[in-house]
Image 1: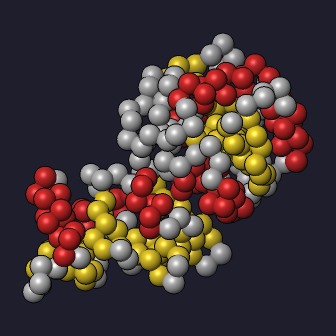
Image 2: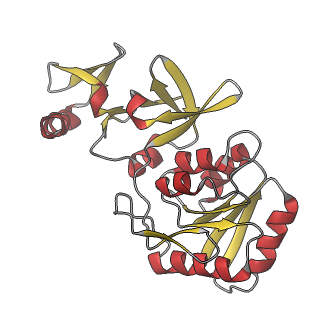
Length: 255
């Protein structure tokens, strides 16, 4: 079964998708959301295989949602606007459907999901892109890749943080804190969930409590007993566990 989350701020659009999906015996609608914040909460709670995602919504946009969930569930955008197609495929969307979504185009998108299987394969290369006769952007066998942007919340707003601005992620009171250029943001995924989807060429887990971006490390300070500390670009000193120090040194040498 393909477990699907419907995300659109318009109830008629969700109703139409729900009606069209009734023709597919191997799909299950596990939830609905009418804005970006609710979508992130539903993804974290329900772990769907596929998100049918609108782009222009209150709060954070569908593009921001897709950037945040990274290598999690697969994404098919369903939107009334074609100008976001390039951004959508940079986020490794399976397909990009223009509203009103047709039965045939939705079937094609679902076939692509079936062809790839339910499991996510982070880091796999994207396939070729083309366009169909209606002008809708398409992607052939694109596989999800590592996220290059992250969605974090500060105060009552969501902010998109580029990967190269991230300094580190840390666990704090059961939440994940993203630190970037003197600012702190809060994220939904746990460190364990986040680690599974991060690019190992750019990130390394230095302890149970922190993941650092390798490019943000300025210095490694060995300590007695085989552990150490990492001094980061913002001056933060993070402990590096004894069992992870050797791997971190090797990774830094290779990078």
